[in-house]
Image 1 (cartoon, rainbow, N blue to C red):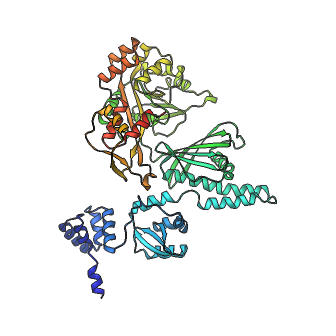
Image 2 (image 1 turned 60 degrees about the vertical axis):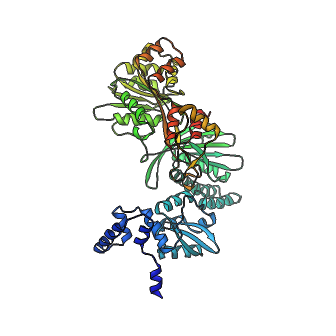
Image 3 (image 1 turned 180 degrees about the vertical axis):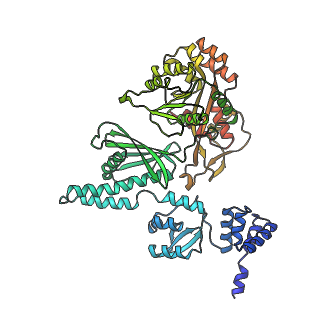
Length: 563
């Protein structure tokens, strides 16, 4: 009987060959290595690069007749999630998926891990139905599904009951609130990092505390919190941010560093008073995930070559335009990172300093101490800089000093609010810089936006709407290929997008464009000349990324045209 069962169990190598994952010759080679090194054949196949780890898991699920769960598509049952503590799920790398017929469905990397099954059966008091999953998917799903409410909310409910008891000592009530508030802030930071959020918004409403995360540039609400948690949580944020907890009417700024999942994160805090109380916004600046490489920002090859040619100028001014949140600071940082060397003295004046760079002298704007952008620039020219980065040109004084610095042998980078590369020219002129001085100083301008990237885990072909096709064809003509979008999955929070990519418009200042500027030519005249010289407008850059299946038509329209 046992022999019959054994015969029914198909060999792993046969499954891999039958499904086209590997050849018969590769199986024979792996078997020889397996016998020689006393390793299981599956491990040998992965180590030698003959198959991918995910292929091995797929084959094992077929061999053991255990369902393979795609956690990118399956929704986790909250009831199942509550049965297994996060620490235990992480310890055994398992995810409780659902409760079906009195059994707890458990997605595991190794369904033969008897210890994990026994531990979770003991805690959940349920019969365990093991199913297989991919290792990296399980880890991501654990991060995604164990959110911030849980035990902290239970603690806070207990604190609320203490507060309602008039006989309780006030200090005991305050301590009862502060403990869960401290833990909740830590969990908020943890969730934000795991979700790739750039900002956390903590906003009091009439009957609840709204918490939203900005992910890929778009705010997404997470579970609302009891409004009674507001005061304690804001106090905790102010304390760690070095702010005045007694001041509740005036806006305040703070900063602190936190360690989340072993990763060091700088957090910038801003508080302001609303009709329902103080709100706080925490800007997350993870040090290890900072991307300051021009080639990874989304430049097309031709546009990148134009910009890198501008960077080779020994002196002059390069200005970046775009609205708040368009990624200007990231591009500025990537630019000075490319120029950073022992032979150059690079100095920056920023408000605030977002990232620390080795070998670069960075200064923080401090209006109370008299350190503004303009004053910083004045002092810089006496400190023998080669390259100067000015966080933003906001006024005529800063614009004039930056121009003078560029004319006197320094390479100056800065940002300015303008819609496109030609708009940057008109904006700096509006600030009072003389046209002939600007043309002598300016190397070129850039405008940029950031669009969301199609989620690679749920990409699907689709037919655009009539309106979308019309926009695409007005830029690139009739489509030559297919269109793609993200269908929405667990890994992208069902948005269809994961990550972001830059869209750039680069305008080197040619002699002809300088002549037009000095002659007082109109915006359209300068734009026509720029297009004649090969400038690729942002809308075309965006649609080229649609053509390459990087983003979607609707996302480009939203990014470039939405108010």
